[in-house]
Length: 84
Image 1: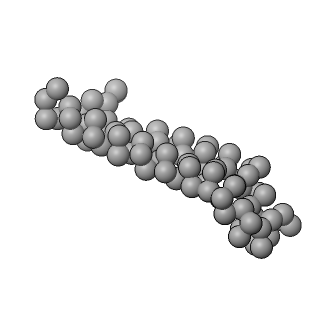
Image 2: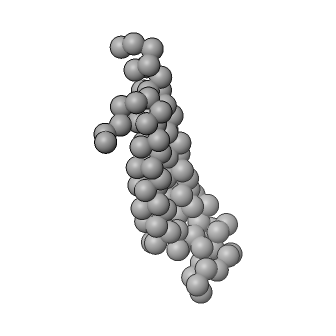
């Protein structure tokens, strides 16, 4: 693999690592680990920890899919491996 290929792979892994970290914090952290602390906050009448466990994690996961698609397109254009 040449230097540009290594840089492309590194940028892709860095993006995936960041997205997985956000996903983990929002789904496991906010929905389970910090649920008791977040439940003191109400969102739409529901405790925030409960909301993250049931709906918030899904909304964030969908947002992460669009963010990933946008950022991968940017990385592909940066390394000139994009599709026309």
